[in-house]
Image (cartoon, helix red, strand yellow):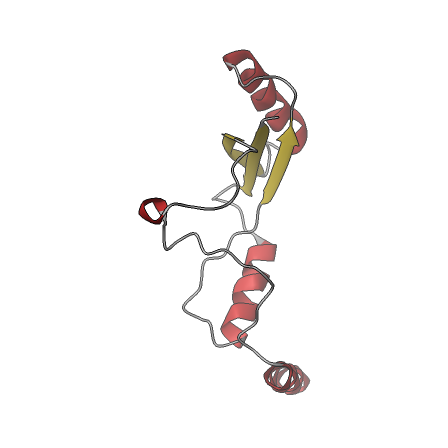
Length: 126
């Protein structure tokens, strides 16, 4: 069964408070080189119909009417994904930008996190 992926992002001209919060947290973790974060939504929809122009037009309409708020968000992509893909890439297809995460990882241990939180708390108290 085909899967359709719809991605929705805040409009470029609007402030993204969630993205700003993530960017601030990254800076506090010493990852300030990761900036201009924007947080959006991803919808994965499975269908028993074959992808066609008619189905995609229907998905586009649903995306604009239901999955996004046209005042503050844009539908940035609608893609069909073959659900038979096993997640394995041939060496020639491998791309450094696609890094599989087998399990959640963190470069910051609990002690560093606690120090960061204490420093932030001290700054707010001043």
